[in-house]
Image 1 (cartoon, rainbow, N blue to C red):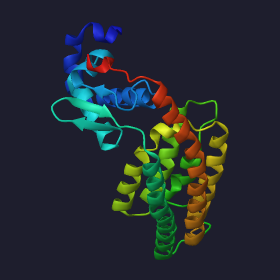
Image 2 (image 1 turned 90 degrees about the vertical axis):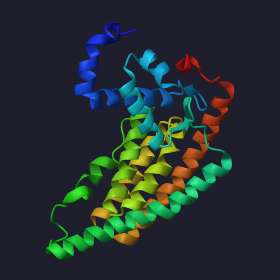
Image 3 (image 1 turned 180 degrees about the horizontal axis):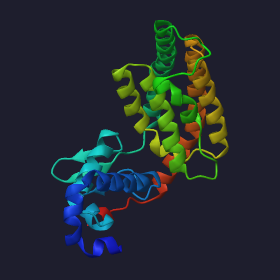
Image 4 (image 1 turned 180 degrees about the vertical axis):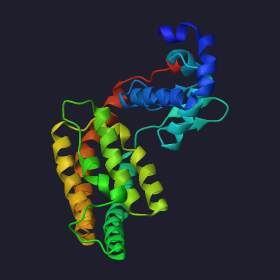
Length: 255
């Protein structure tokens, strides 16, 4: 147990004053454990058990678990805590990419259309710097070095797709994309390192088309990215499910 946990009485006031920071810390730690399969699909988690294991009070743990549930990584069990969501079945995996193919090219096209409409309304020239959410698209398109951890790649990939969805201007499309994306977190952890560079090149092509205000090019670039991503994820899907079969669920969080 850490020194921080050695005197829980001294932490109560700090947690009450800054529980969002503590909840963020608890969220980050729990999510990392899920991504590393330390909390395997199907594992049962209790608020009390995780509070003791992570040396937090129950309030930030409760908030962190609720946040992970909202992202689709955990499922609530009536009167008995949470369960780590199981890996997708083959049929669910196929359905997920079918849904992504409907939503994300549309989001990319709308992002470019919205940017063009705003530029026309403001009388901006195409060469002028892009303002608003789209201004950060190129930065969001970058992926970490292959030597970085898989969690860093997962977060970078999520940020880019969220950024495109936000640029679309549709709250409902953005919400749907975020919800679908959560189910790929565990599979992204098995993506081959060489795929990271491929992903960045595809992201940059999408960002370039959006910022150039070319709706059809943005739509097509996103469609090509998803087609290639499906192939990469299919291999990761097979690896993740194979490991899940061979690795027993960890139950220590429930003790």
